Length: 420
Image (tube, rainbow, N blue to C red; front, side, top):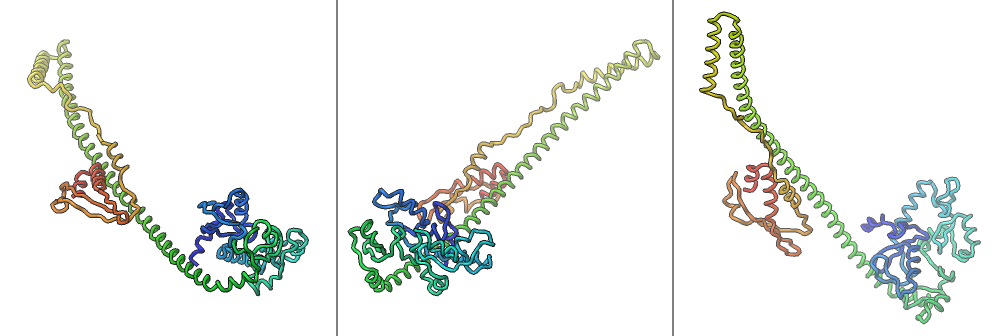
């Protein structure tokens, strides 16, 4: 049911699960690995008294005694059935499954030890190999009538012998060779006696399993709910970050526009004064140059004497006027015009803007600034935040000051109103 969401994860070691050599096995700690990787892992730790889990290092017993991940096997079987449906074949031989379409054969038998569906040709080849000739092979129709046969294991993989004893200490069926080697000294009974004991214990085990499944299902639902809430909170926090910084960006752009307008106004004002002074000097200089040119012409004897006297009088008058009201010899203005911005302070504030809280918090605002603040005036107050889980108080006045500092860099009046 709800646990199927985890079935998309392959074996953590080889990244593969199948119904044959990579059969998923469940360790006592709950981690799942394929049988092939676990047998190799067990061989690497043969000198140790126990084999640790590759993930959490919790020890476990023999790999051969580990249970199969039945839910995962059921899903894999369903997926395989969907593949067969896509090939328009009811059941394909697993030995021919990856052959070209014209070479794929329908399965007629199943080997209970190899847990493979076989076509008639592969069934005959199975019986000729020394390793598999003693395996129990049944017809597919018998497996369909008795689904439990699909997971039956009646032969010891290591010694190719039928199971005929039950190791009470290890709680698993074994063959005679196992009882004399790996399981030597263990208390063993017949399979029939062990089956009777299991039959008596089965109702209690079924009830215990039902309760455990119910608890895990409840926990799984709670975990799924927390995951959904976490996803929703992540999306909301992401949108909040984007909205806040878009607002800050808009305020910065507004402040930049205001600064450009102020620079433009001051430039035009100063440029107008300089242009007026330049125009005055150009006019006075032009008139004086014209009077001097006429005086030079009269001095050379050209023209009437009366005109020459008038020109000389005009030149004297202009020089007398310039002496009485001389134009300013200083430049009416200066070229200095620069912008000062405390960029380091702004960057420092931005680098500390925002805090990612990993616990639920409760906030309270304190201070007289909340009661006596007036629009357009700066006011101070303290925002206190307490984590509800750890009960750790956090003084987050910096959050308000950060916003106020960034706002002040962009627009001081707006910052004062925001702080109020």
